[in-house]
Length: 360
Image (cartoon, rainbow, N blue to C red; front, top):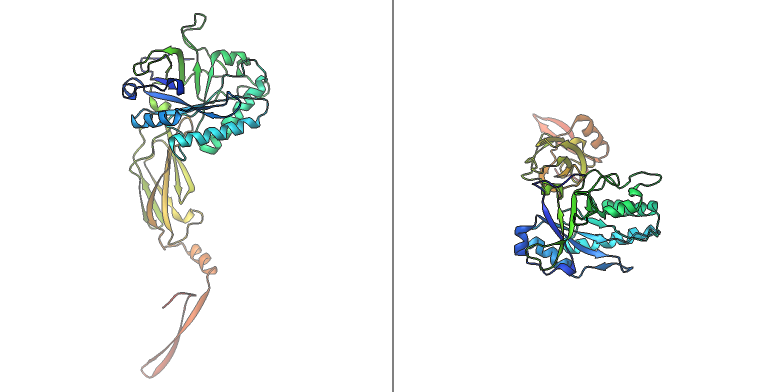
């Protein structure tokens, strides 16, 4: 894997035993903070007693953060479901409903140390946890584990499926103060790059009175953080088309945008797009006269999505293509109004046909 660079970000991870911190000082020393939200080491799910307080302090002092769950894999794969669901719930208590932190949420796997389960079992458990988490939250999950632990479990290679976890962002622990360790992490488990490297558990950081876990991060916070919401979104309607414009996202790992109308997916655009015309006649279930709400989200190279921004564009025009008008008329009930006209001693009778329920 790669070594740190002169641009590598610096961060710490905190828990209830390292909660006595001066956040005013930390805000000048740390680019990011990971918090322990919970753990299952005692055999049942337990919330870190300082998590909610620490999450609020990170927000108050503008330090990007997220949290990790100390997981305990077992031969019973269904325990991945219960631990995952409890983790999702406590994250929302810390960050708000539908929010899971600015940075990658993390599953921390460093047990069992006695190899009481097989490598395949361990990997299947983690994979089940992450797939459930990502499906329920629409967020990518990062894996924390130790270099020694990957080696202990057959280099995290599944006997039938290969390196099934290597597409997860990796937070690896490998301490440089251990003489037998290399100067930086070796390739392992199918990974050739780390996203976060915990290089010591004895770090001394101003603002924290006890030794603390310290980490190198990527060269830019965007590589840890979910994309920012798209800005300056505008939408107008004319002639059956909705024109949408927006400012290009400044995220360095931007990969593209998804567009929606009334929550219906419309299209995916590349990262250079800043405008798009939507043919409202092709939007499912959108009828003339209905309100049109355009939504847009950006996504990055990791597959993380920004919060969706929605703007009201107006109402769909009454203009229709001839075949669309015929289709609509076939579904409507009509009634007739008789009109007798007498002009120049001549009587004429007219019938006006109009939709039932309309008033003339």
